Length: 234
Image 1 (cartoon, rainbow, N blue to C red):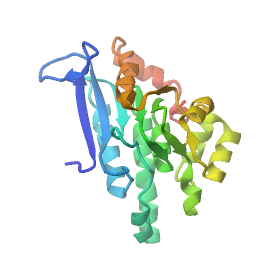
Image 2 (cartoon, rainbow, N blue to C red):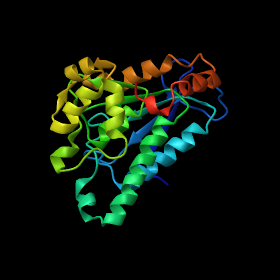
Image 3 (cartoon, rainbow, N blue to C red):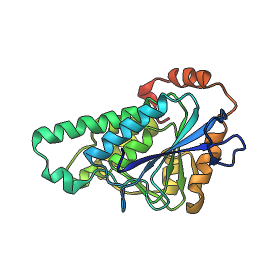
Image 4 (cartoon, one colour):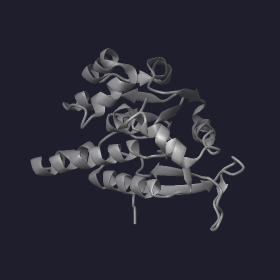
């Protein structure tokens, strides 16, 4: 049983998000919900649960699209630094592999994915958001490749994903400086695809995902595969 990652499935036959019923064959939207308050900081256990939840969702034929959500307060503030400080070199390497597996599992989902971003998406949390196909953000959210502020570099392919989304020069600026980016600049950079009022982020993500309900899942999967995993997040 997952401790920090929940999966919520809704029937979107009427695009209103009413809860699914057993035996109902209507297309469904799944929400992969991070639930580790107050900041959804990422630990080795959280990474495991993200990868497991993504794999389970990908195997379900009744799921039309997936929303990645951290709740109405904050999307994800990145790695749990107190935990990282306790890890041996071997444990840190294992943690890095778990991080990469979680991000890759989101990126590899054969269904359209939308990250619904509230509050902050920082460091590894930003990388997780970039693994989704699109990002809907509150207009007060903050973003940053903040690892360098802790004396670290982005883990795994975080920098590559960022460069693939906003271009190499702009990505280097964010990675080398660790500076925060407000929602308006994030939209201008291409980090996010839509800005909405903070209390409507999840509903806006549902509306975005609902556009795909009328298309055959196999066609959507093939269309997504045509872009390749390396370009996920654009």
